[in-house]
Length: 190
Image 1 (cartoon, rainbow, N blue to C red):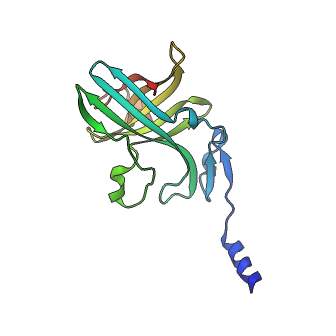
Image 2: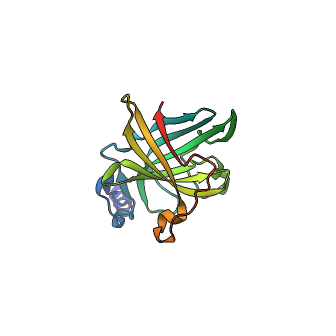
Image 3: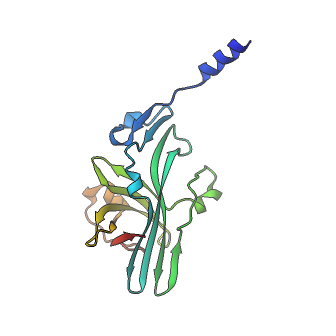
């Protein structure tokens, strides 16, 4: 009897293949595969970053999430999720620094989910591409975040926003940037 139960359990179980983030391919995004940050590239981005310019302060928090699965997908991956806070003249315009990394099909849970999701594109491990939700304008945009070292040796992150549509299809030509958050600033790691 024990042998039959073990045999049935082994038939129903699928092995999970793990692929390094550095060389996974589209064909790996299936069958419960796991795209893993084996080189710990995302660790360099994780943390709190801030830009201040007189009366404006923009803060982002990036968190490495391991073994994450989007509902209805059939694979797992490591990625970066994040949130942001933006203040002008002492007024908080947006505060989404605290977020959940759990995502379900239930729209009621979406309000607290991360407002930024992304990952690196090899071979440039110092650049992170992220989809960002502009809460005030109620639209999505693409952010390029590039790691760099400041003049005093501090860790910095170049933040540059693109319009989502023209980022995906450059043939549409340049489009005026209309976002409620900074579009081109350098943040310092706190």
